[in-house]
Image (cartoon, rainbow, N blue to C red):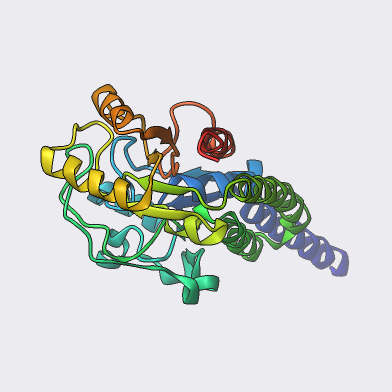
Length: 297
């Protein structure tokens, strides 16, 4: 009788271990609100997670509004990675499981930049909006992007403690890559600290602060030719600040490039990479951005 009881207890123990293993070995389902967070999570969690960023390629994810089915997918995730800094305002209008939310920039929230009020405009046929309130492209300060990645590391470990050794190793590799970008950008700007840049959009605030770049922003769309009043305002700004280069989020229209050339202003594409890139990944896009930026410095 004792042998049978012992055998039954052993079977139950083995079954419990198998169930536990099945639960803990299941891949994490992670949803993010922008591409940089998806990239960081993929690098950190590796094959132990499926990482989803469902926003369309032609809409700025900061102003995207998911449909009901997509919100439901977020609600079913193990982790929902938020950018913080009031990015993706739709998050505040739906019910999401609080314990699964990870505000990746919460650790430096006291250092957010107030971007003030902004002119209403739209991207790619999307709804009109303004870049007002808190500046949200936090990851363009690569030191801050490391802190965002570290918040992801900690969240993954909380969900899967048994993966800590590999997760820490993966994070260390990502951190080295981001530190290399940080050091290179510092070096580029240091070559000509008196350089003044224009920006086609007010999205480079954290980059400007971290690396000491003098930057003045307008609100232009790369695929639209500015109207006469915009050209006049730009001309006044360029004369006042002796501007020679303009940063664009995407490749500008040929007509805009030619008109700027006539004003003595060159064009540089510095993609914030909020969306999934058509080619390469976050790291390769940022490396290309720095290569472009060298033209001005």
